[in-house]
Figure 1 (cartoon, rainbow, N blue to C red):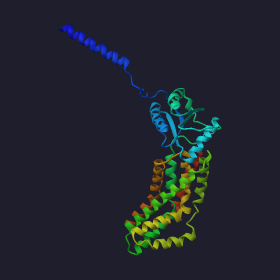
Figure 2 (figure 1 turned 120 degrees about the horizontal axis):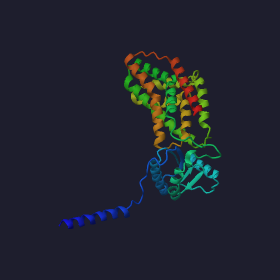
Figure 3 (figure 1 turned 90 degrees about the horizontal axis):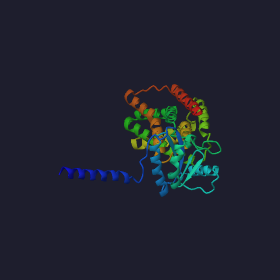
Figure 4 (figure 1 turned 90 degrees about the vertical axis):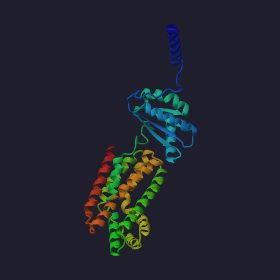
Length: 346
């Protein structure tokens, strides 16, 4: 019996060994850290394209396989991204653009089959150590927009005395009329926030239609430095003040205060909108679409209304806030100056 058991165990062992030899997965799992060299590639695709979806899935695997790889995505239903793709094709002397396409170093991989068969070997050879260029000039910055610069511009914008002064005038009017400062003030700030957010979407959509030059980031830096000095003197236009006064007088309830916030944010735009416009111009250089731009705009506008919320809280509990507007203006100017220098050094 013992001999029979030994034979049975030997047969099972042989079966397991045969399975290990002849059975293999259809797709090898990505292996991490095959090269530690930082590399970057540009990937152009279109939403709704089945080959593009397959290529996007493969690109995710590649990003796991090469942790030091930076993949910059360009969705080409955006006209500026499409124009950029055509520009790269022209630089590679290809007259019939197609997608999905990957540009790596000086190489062009067109179609999902070529991407899947040739991209990994090129990365293993460190072909992407230099970002793709066209006529020797990088077309778009690599990586996400610098969050610190967006944060700084939003904070500089939020400290603009125009918006703070209008809120204080509203709160004084509400107190004099014995109206609800708390609810009405928050309704005004919410209207301001949503209106400024919508304006941002509109401006960003318009700016995206222009194929801005590669040196736009440096231009934004120079303009930010100029705006730093201009902001020390800029004031709400005198012709806007009677309109704002009439709107404030209509803020008899939270509902009307919300509408007043919507209207006044548009009126204040010439006074407060400089940093906003520069931040939106900067964002267009990074190929952001969809939820990405929504996230940046929400962050910007939450920072923009934060001082208004602080003023409301102080007024609600202290009744007579002393707002040093001259110092606020200086802090705003210094922030814009720092952001401009930062952009020039990028």
